[in-house]
Image 1 (tube, helix red, strand yellow):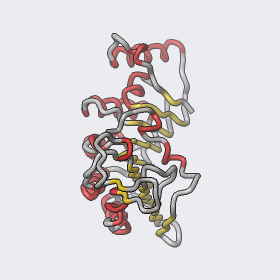
Image 2 (spheres, rainbow, N blue to C red):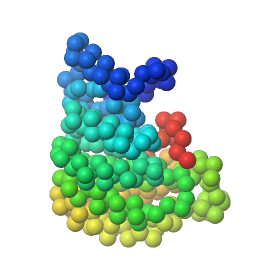
Image 3 (cartoon, one colour):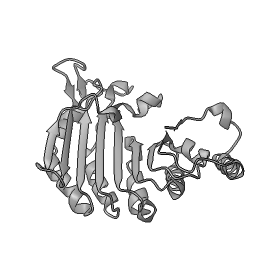
Length: 254
């Protein structure tokens, strides 16, 4: 399960294009994997690695450089990897990537059947409704069967954190801005909105929670192929995905 992180010392003085070109030439000359079942990396590192093999399950973390560079990196990975499952971790500054990727370049994502979008949220206020609207609009040209949207509050890591948004953190009386905002969302209606926007969808999951917990507070799934169609639960230890965001990579999120 390759997980890639390149050191600054390795990259110093060399452009990302040069590193990608050199790595691809090396793979062609000396051979490489035919298939990697899973690959995880920051977008810029994935681009520079220049992998030429098929990758059924691809997990990228948006780095936060210029949007056109991030889009280039993700599209370049897809053209070779052709994943059926794609997981993309975002920060609020990256939300515009969604339309630029999945709507404007939908043809590149024809191999996808499952998409997971992870949002790590440090600075408030944040427009949750606009974010969820953007997802529906951005994905409507895809032919995916499964969508998972995760929103994790990480305001305790932000230097701009305000007590008005995050009070008594870590106590039973804690008030979480994210939990309060999501409580105002009509989740079942939102899932039906996604299903209407993307007719091929059969399963939608929305998970969200506080920064201080290792699992999400709420996980709601609408599955058209199971009865009952809607299930709701609290997070559980098996929700390993909840711990793979920016903070665990040592990346600033504020």
